[in-house]
Length: 489
Image (cartoon, rainbow, N blue to C red; front, side, top):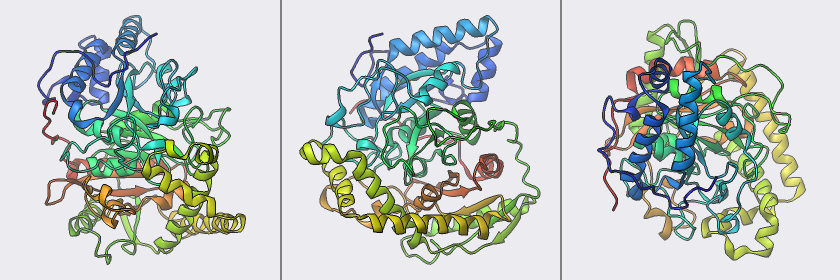
């Protein structure tokens, strides 16, 4: 099928999503209406496409919108539901993919001149499962180049902008996913996370972002960056939306040896809000005494812990290894693997890379075999320390996700490396060790931009993260508040 290439579709311009509008229905609410015949997948898709048309020219969350494909799949979803075929929690639900995931017949641009015209001949594993689950693909989402780089102005498409204030970045590299979900275009989107690339946009855009356990979601057909740190998963507007999205894509894949051959739990079954007996660990060591951490974030984490304890969770302080060890180790592994992944093009076509990507990838050339061996050894020790000191006796670790609100675009062209406020995330430890980690919104800072908290679990402990997140979202998540959207600039 041929799809249009412009980033914006032709459609009537509606008002922004309002309470009760199709875009504000949760995945579960929309699913119930679809199955009852009171709503159609076509109506959901059309409404989402109209929102994108009306507002994405100023936000730039999409690099490609595929209305013909979306409406065809929506009609198929409606037809199957009428005939009694139910493919799962995302049947008939619109979604979009970060533009590193292959979708048959569509370009996988990676936001790079080097792969601008690369058309996929087959689906990635994530898209394959979403298609099999009856989901409705709306298109491809903006990313940093090759899921690294930054909001560089010298790339084929403009960088996405934070919907809460378009002078600020949405973070990255799954930037379009964070923007599209926060703006209300979609309830769920799919991205990747190698050092925080889903949790960062979730934190800075006020959505839920889950980096699953390493290997829980197949990376087959997704452009690699650092294969031993790459994770793939969902961003959602709510915890329940995110759980439904994970349910649709999790599970073993013989084409990806990183996945494990084990049954996938029912993530939706435990969304009760009951945290009695849940064992919660915390440590303030990484963020509380750091002057870079906003006081609102520290207070938000304290309130979250108090709320969980008041609901019957067992909250205890724990000891964490120094953050600097995780950060240094993760940066070495990611730099070495990133350079190896892109070495051919770095040598043969260096000027085709965007500035920020080139400057981040090239240092990997200087990492020797002994440096990498020592980093990999340290990685094993740090992961074992987390398992021993935290997860041997606890279900969830509560810590900071980011230390401040989203940086301004102006911070990037003037400075390299960017100032610390543009690199404030504390997400790399759990990408390094492979533990599941979630960015959960906790409202807003005084400047009106979102803040949140990070929940971390033992390997394959996603159900515990969802369990802890539900009551925190209900108390602090502000899910009824959306950014004020404008039309095209």
